Every structure is written in structure tokens, then in C-alpha cells.
Image (cartoon, one colour):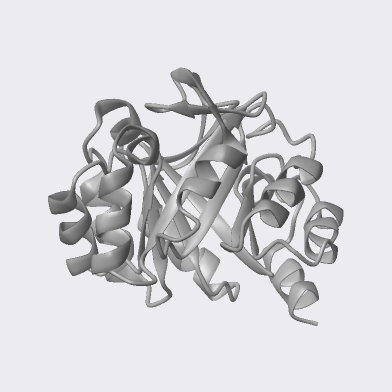
Amino acid sequence: MILYPAIDLKDGQCVRLLRGEMAAATVFGDDPAAQAAAFVAAGCDWLHLVDLNGAFAGQPVNGVAVAAILARVAVPCQLGGGIRDMATIETWLDRGLARVILGTAAVEDPALVRKAAGSFPGRIAVGIDARGGRVATRGWAETTDVMATDLARRFEDAGVAALIYTDIDRDGAMGGPNIAATVALARAVSIPVIASGGVAAMADLLALRDTGVIAGAISGRALYDGTIDLEAALRALRE
């Protein structure tokens, strides 16, 4: 199982939100590229980047910070937040992103997901952010009537590289991930599923790994707070 350290970007800074609330942002640093380099120095194989402002604006906002990260590190990076058209997808992939994450677009413009996945095999992921099992869009500000599993199944044959499932009520709360819901999603589709939201301790990572059906896990606040030691976690997951 791959561990993806998260760098959430708000106003050019590294932050973590509590349950997706922009007003509940904790700033962990004002040099995202340096934070990315620190994660890579600890041995991570991937980085997970989120343009939080972009998710609300519907277009990239923290592009300077993302570009600085891409210039600083050599590991593959995936980015979500405000990417809702083919031109933006192409621009980011051309600038060095390994994978683009489409969230709101997956609900509002599924044809874009299919087109992008066909044009860029292995480089398009779908972000499924759910509150009470229902998908939320536009920076989690709007909750739809679409169920997470139903959305995932729509892209079963589209060729997307991964599904990133976030339980919004767990995100940033340090209360543990929603393993049951994540496992249910992973068993409902053949697409690799990455767990996000609530990972607070090494035990959470091991529990996700030991399900045998979850391909990856994203962790942010636990790494910043030090409740998970990144080097130790990576070593344990590789054993």
C-alpha cells in the first residue's frame, strides 16, 4: 500500500482543514516546496497535492506553489482542486504532474473524465469526497444526491488510474479513517482505491493495509503533528 503525504495549499501556504471547512484551517508552513522536499527526504514515493482555493474557485489558484513543488522534487505528484476542463488537465500534465484528480468534474461533467482518461492513460484519478455516503462537490460546499459507490461504478470502464475516497466527516479530525466505507467501495469496483481522511496513527495505516483491498492512503495532519513518523511508516508498509 502506497502512503501519500498530503500538501494542502491555501493562499500559498501548507494548511490542514477540519472536515473541509476553510475557516478551520491550521497553517503548518509557508514554504510548500520545502515541505515537499522534507517528505521526499523521508523516503516517500508519491506526493498528494490539493489546491484548496482552486476547489472553490473552479480554476487553479495555487499554481505558483504547485510549480515550485514540481521543480523541487523528483517523485511523482498528483493534484486535485479546481481542475475542470481539458485545457487545465493538459497544462498540468505538461508541467510535470504525474496524475490529475477530477472531483467536481466527475459529477458534473463525466464525459470529461472519460475523455481525459482515454487521452492520458494512467494519469487521471477520480476524487470521491463523501459526507454521509453522498458525494460533495465544489470544495465540499455542496452535497449531491449521488452515492459514492454509484459514482465510482460510472467510471468502471473509463480507464481511470485510481479512486481517491475521502470521508469528509473524518478529514483532519484525527479520529481514524472510515475503513468500512472505503473497503466497501474498493470491493464494489475494480479500480484501485486510495483512502483519505482521518488517518491519525500508524495503526490506522496498518489496518488499511491489512484489508488487502486498499491500494493507498493519504495522510496530512498526522504527519505534521508528528503522531505518525513518516520514515517509520514507510518502512513498516514496505515490510
